[in-house]
Length: 514
Ligand code: ATP
Image 1 (cartoon, protein in one colour):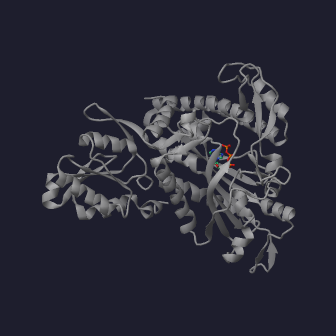
Image 2: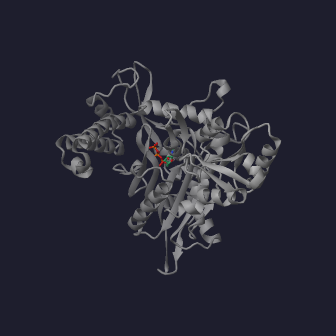
Image 3: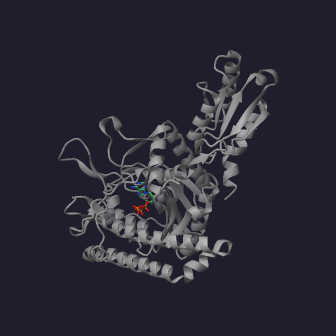
């Protein structure tokens, strides 16, 4: 089996080869941590966004969606705390001149200890076979408990030092753990310094009158500043939510891991406005609901876990991440945060406007509390894509690359293939099927190369169905439909195609699994 690094490299090259993700401005050697979505990638991304929007907005009669501007009045970012506190702790290696996020160096160190735990578990699983109880093992095995304690001690010290802005202690921790530059092995570190992640720009023509602006580092603030507008014009009653998808920008210093950490990325966020005091209940509700959404896509039950935050952001009274098992390990995919009334109160203070809700049942006004769910669309793309890519060995010993995307998200739902290119009757019939199906689905016509080769190409591109038109089709109006994952072929009537495809790709069928 390929190791994780090889698997990840394969994901990146496959994404390029099959028209999913390109490096931005590649002809100029690219721009670091900026990517373009290609013809298939743009479709996959749109389908993920739609799947989220349908579950979040269409299926909740108390959640509405907006589309706020990327530019916002600069005071927004003073009020939100981003001007003062949206920083990453950075450390430079004096020998290699490379810059790292200090917290990530420590977290990566802990991830290495975690692989040791995984190894112990795998060993024990082999030894005990069917009788193995993982839960019991990890809560009683001394070696595992020792590793876990070490991780917990390190992470809680890191959390405390970051919270107290004790950057000297973060450096001390790196030195005590003897963490070395991953590239060169050098331990010659500078002090840890804070670095603000917002991109600045200017509005206005002349230098004197220009106003300093920021590209938004999150979409959430566009929702907060519109809270009262939406509540009043939509006559929303608490509890209610406002959802939004859109671009956000962060000057990430350690931007690697492909589209996992980008400088320009897209978020899908929902702020749920609630009565103060009910936040615990709603926190649990949204944790559960969001995990169910993820699991409805069938990417594997064991590929998710919650990571509760020890270090809470300045606005939160509870926070958790849904982590996904990416090719480089479990990492944050989505954040769920109980943000209290911090944001609305801050905007009240800085704008001088009241941002309150009159609760008829209670007979009084209050600033609502907020529960946030925030997921990176690009990270979700990477989760779906990397999970889908598998190499299968077939019965005849040959191999095939297949991109087992959930059918509901696949860019192209079916490829229509005349068995031979030279037979005009076949190509005409295939094109007529394309013309009919394209009203409902993205379909693709392909007549080049032998049909086996065309199947492989569609497997690798992630197309769930191939429909082949052959001589028999001309006689009885039937075609063969082949499933990407099972490679099973069935003869069906042309008139049945629409329903067969719809059943497998319909959002309803997938979201019903939630
Ligand atoms: P991280 O700790 O990985 O930097 P974060 O905790 O800063 O992420 P949030 O501010 O909670 O992230 O943003 C919500 C979501 O937006 C994240 O769960 C992630 O999916 C996505 N996200 C954040 N930063 C980036 C980025 N630079 N590139 C791609 N997606 C991102």
